[in-house]
Length: 365
Image (cartoon, rainbow, N blue to C red; front, side, top):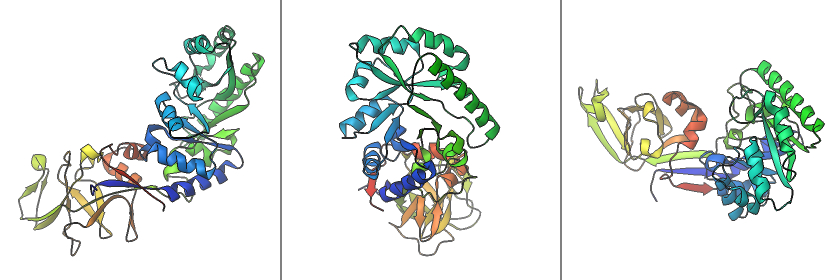
């Protein structure tokens, strides 16, 4: 097996789910597994969460939901981003629940319904400014929806934009959501499920929990905000091995562009990982890896397939030694927060950026 691989710790995901479930305090948990379970592998992750008793799954795309059905997932699956590409009949056939925010989509579902009820979750935009029916347009939307009697609003949802940072805006969004709920009910709909809470809201804003919570990043070990202190554990261990060792003399350089030049005798390890694997080039000369439990700086520009690290301060580094990008090694830890800081991005992008050419290995630990 290629030494560059991502080890996904399924017991750790199960642990994180239990932390989430405790915080949800009796509400149902819709596990968000979009983007290949945030890079961890959607089918093995969903199968383990189903075994653990999760109530349902959230995906971004119909294709993701169909993949889960084909893998034997039988829980509720909510297609969070709505429908693209005319997959209405396929969604119904797979037993997926669509999120609705466009009256044209209601018309398309009505056309394939064969007069049978189609349960949808109506998304309202209370301040995210992306998808969802804007509050000012909601009365007209609900009036138009009367033309499609097969469409049944089973759920009402919104998405919080500042649950990790601005509680006042969370409160403003919740006021809008309450208004939307009242309006939907006045138009004769009876949604049985209300939901708004993402990972940060789950831990910081219990007033947002409603009937379902929608954790995503927290299932994979990150709470959604640095200010949240809960016992989550990162579930991905991204590793490779030392491929070559050489010594640079003062003035010699490593990598494209000579962005690193040795000022002293420097021992370098070349490792078989690069931006083609998802290691951000912006972490060049900024990021670190773990070797023998020590933090070693990345030096020179990260290339598509190869990266060089300075191992001058670590005794005995040898060919084949494990190199860790994410995870724990001999008591030392690097996580997606560390790599994100080096690359100038966020942990979400670190995890989802691990490319498809990096094999996923699933471990019960």
